[in-house]
Length: 174
Image 1 (cartoon, rainbow, N blue to C red):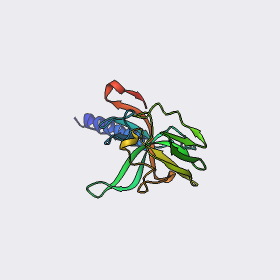
Image 2: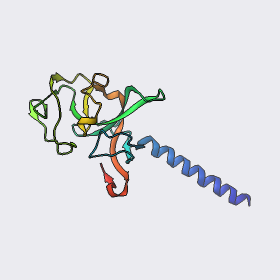
Image 3: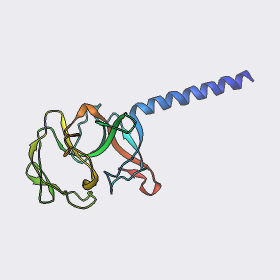
Image 4: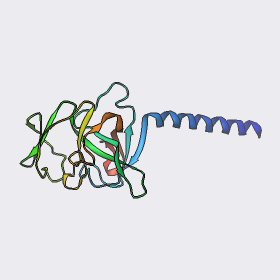
């Protein structure tokens, strides 16, 4: 009986060690808002790569990232947001005539929910170590256009969305 107990303890210890190692690289996350529709929907279950930008990689235009915002949830905890990287350090960004312009070039954004971006925003330059992030559902997204969010320092990134696990109909890379 004691031999079986030690086998169980060993197997459980190995499983816990593997889980801890995996959790250093991957973070499971559930999408809670509508700001990334039609790319991601509420209750989509995704995996984030926590090390995507810690191992020498830099955020790139088009990446979908989760970050710690300065906003609070109803219970007073810090709100994590998920958005798309539109511009990186040194880029200029402006919005007019339904389009987003980065470095004076209109972006081709087939992923946006309505196919256009409302409003006007004069040209701004993304600061050092900053990111300009927008949701794909531009009409329902609180993002870098809003002063309460603004530019996001790379240090606030939690991870890069890399894989959707659920719903199964969307199973695969993000």
